[in-house]
Length: 87
View 1 (cartoon, rainbow, N blue to C red):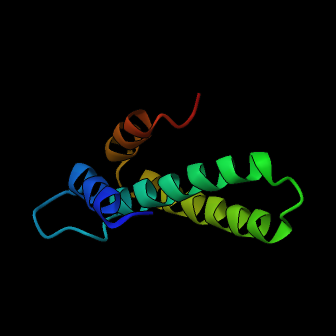
View 2 (spheres, rainbow, N blue to C red):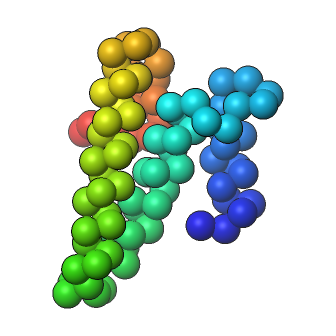
């Protein structure tokens, strides 16, 4: 991920001016990495190292989403709507 795209995601999902580590920001960054790795896997089907890393990222995002859902359901609903998760 390029630095300016990462900064743009942080700007878009942060809660306050100095926020870089809230669950929303972390989930947005993970979702971006997951999407790029998914595209990579479409053309490199036998890349099992990347597959393992992708599954670990998906699990980490799932844990963060569960945390946010338990703490504040409205922030959770807003985030999954903005990211386009849960079809």
